[in-house]
Image 1 (cartoon, helix red, strand yellow):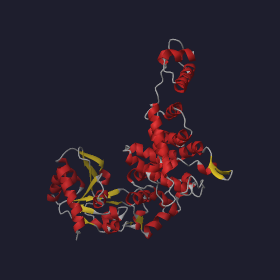
Image 2 (cartoon, rainbow, N blue to C red):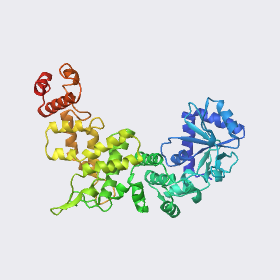
Image 3 (cartoon, rainbow, N blue to C red):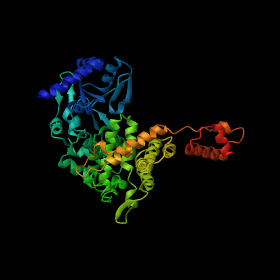
Image 4 (cartoon, helix red, strand yellow):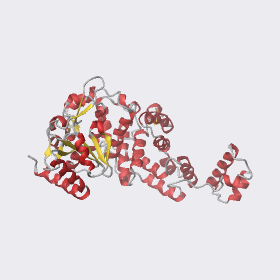
Length: 469
């Protein structure tokens, strides 16, 4: 029996389908008339019950063979076989997967076998977690919940519907990591123990990265997932560079929050908050969060006691080397890696420029160093996250009013005209091509001219020529 609360949530699904996917209702009726049964399954059901925006619709069809499902769908448009061997079809203009229950075959190279007559409980037992092992009948709008996923969600528990099946796919370890952070849930004792011992060494870096991306883009506090890996004792295995920050001292006056690991976790959560406050695009949020994760990786190898104070001189420089090692192991997108490394290298500069009361030329030089990968505005955000990651009371970042110096950095960058991009060079190759042959010599002359332009504010083309030729 579905509770009133569940029925109210399911009513939202009916409204969504009627308004945005009316053809789905027609397809479901055709399937039903042919002896099929269509269920909304997986993450869409979970998100509906959690009042989270539904991103993907997956409909699983029971009771009819795959070829009959394909024939019925063809009545509504051209059908693409996005995974026919897995029983997955899609109509071209409808961003919905139509799948069938399946089971694994036997032998050394088992094939996936579509089984339209599989029981719901058996089909749902293949899912990773009970909260993902639910369905909604799209004719009766009944919640199908053979493993009490809704109850587990209400108790904020992550459970495996079938423990033996869970460990067959090591990627599920990383899915647990991101679900912990996304939904602020905890694994039950059995799942916790499984995750402690399951073999994850053969998961491809691409698949791991996909889960880390979800962690960073869909969580309010991605640190929860990282802290869980640390609690399990598996951080050294997965992110040894981050593991090295555990127990690394910081100056208590500047960092009352504790060691470098705690600081990094607070900075990571602050990066998410900054992303939301400043309406960053997904790729920008991803870069900012990765920069927060990596910004102090240089501290373990540079930290020492100098005149009775804990110092980590040039950790920003050393951190680039270590951050590159971490990033290139899991990310195969060079533009993201290089942008993150720029933010790691220069994350200290906003505070330094404001404390030293630097002139506008210093801001212009910094903007040029960041270009073309990132901007002064983005650098300010990583600096804000860094400054806010100093909360001694709770494992969460301080509120944003603690970063007055970064606001000044933004004001000065704006005043210098370099907040979003560096100052354009006045003298270019076109101006010299009749005088000097293009090549290294011209490049050096243009670089020198740009330095003069920035340092002395000279924007007269002829004057710059006179000075460099």
